[in-house]
Length: 433
Image 1 (cartoon, helix red, strand yellow):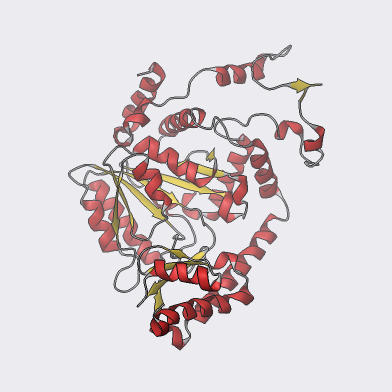
Image 2 (image 1 turned 120 degrees about the vertical axis):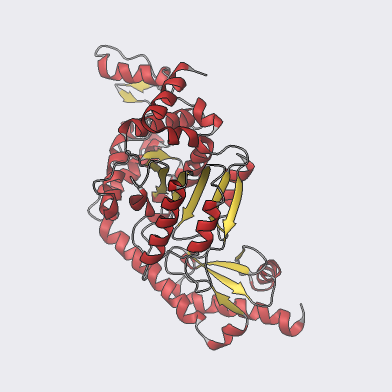
């Protein structure tokens, strides 16, 4: 094992051995090499005459570039577009996102957490976490309603076992009892990865205060029973809370809760700020000790350096300018109200009496999606029929559940959308298609 990795591991053991035992075998080997990038960083601070270190080309002390590209990027300085972004991301953007986290999550005030590390959107951030903490046959505890890509990230790539519990109990509230039972099954193993995604994809559900209290109590009970827990908060749709739910991430409530609990927040501008193609995400750790936060950042940087090297500088510059814009708050509120109106319109439509014969729907109060529970028709058969006969695209989650993204359907078209789904179901019931 590399000496730098050994030193990082020694620091983890010194300040919190529980975090060390959470690491995967790969995670224990990771470190950020003192190679070209670190030498270039030193040169950027001290080389006052010539800096011949990093692999870019310059012209008249400006990054070399094509004018036909630059003319389309009026207003952006070449140094904020063409140069490499740091491995951990543009520092000013990391600071700005941390300010945003504190503003939107009051529970984080006076808590110890790291400077967000910039990732190539959320999938990359989740993949980093999988590499850091998941070994073959490690348990990933998550609700049964989950984003399908978790299978690829945690199971196919890393060999982790997804162990689910029903998202909803009989009262259609978050299933705290099922969650606790799954957690406590790990007592003999002493390790678990918890993965919580709110607003939830595919259902669009975010829990209420009393449900969150139950979840936090269950996590704390598991920690006190000797289970080391990496708790991942996939906050992809953060902020899109339309009704009576919690309005902040569980990250703040878990930060500093217990030495065996490592909270990890994965979020980004992609869904929150409607810039999906810019691929800017953030990965944030919470810990009592700054030393732990530094070690985790160094290991994360080692992973980034060994995969994508660094993210898009242009995308990061655009997001930074957006967050600092005096138009940001007003435009974000405008888009929020539009999304909320669509969600409320969907509920109004779904409450029509005729629909109750063919489907129910899971509780939803946030996010981009809602999910129908079909009562008589197989979801995949219906999905294909809707495509072939009506030109309507939906997502079949399993044999009963059909996900609808109201986020990409205009308000005036929502009624027709559900009417066509209803018509498709009736084709099976009346015509036997």
